[in-house]
Length: 360
Image (cartoon, rainbow, N blue to C red):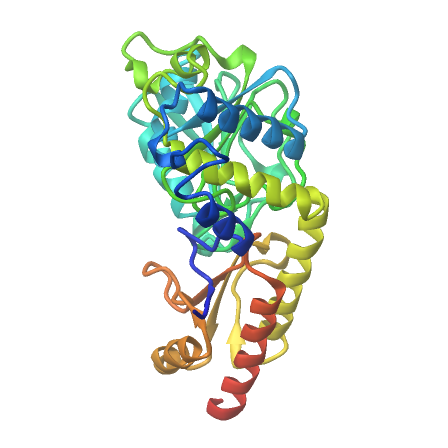
């Protein structure tokens, strides 16, 4: 069996070691006589899996004690509704930055529940940068400030955070969480779909500060109320148990790799190699402002778009898959999350040089 280098934006590659461990434990988890998929979520076996996963995630991110960790369903898209349903009612309004496709979706959903002030936008430059923080127009009565620190589609990343005074920052970190150390205390809520850097699709992680729990609107459904899930330790209903288990294996793999500081060094090195290949050859280009280039999602275009299909077909023959850019922007996109080995990026860079030499 030959494993390809899968550059998909999500669901994305998982570490081979994690998949192998899951395979070995598929029929019998540690002598229990059953698969994790068959376990009661309230049984002692799965409770051990769940508690270990949370402890490992807390360790990796150095999550303060005054934050709860939730393992939920519904993807980041459900969080677009949960956040305003739980927080916006405190003042009736919130600030949102608009830096790409996922920001726009969060804004659209937020408008269903109150007043949304778009405090910063880079739409005029095609979402190829993050507006200077000094130019953000934050409102006085915002219940929170929503940001998307890494736009998966456009490959645009924040280079810091705005000064939001005492307003909690809510961050969609679906495509950047666990790629490098962060200061969790800078945020009120962090949420992330799992299918990029955490595990398989079906799981959503929410990290929420204690004082932001318990403010849901009266009309908020129980399943969308953070208090419901905090009070029931993410088990109000049956959680995505197998995705939770696999996420736990990824957390253990990250610890074995040296934690997030080590991963940040690897990820930066991978990104530097790919950007050098793009910038060093006029056959390729990347439109994102250098200070806002993502180290997770790297879009690029060929000098002649008529060669896109050939590029993708030949890349696939070399075991380099899922490089087609999002339909809204075209071109190519290489998502190089934690599980993408450095050899995968090296192979892509070599192929790009060869293709340009032959077809440029």
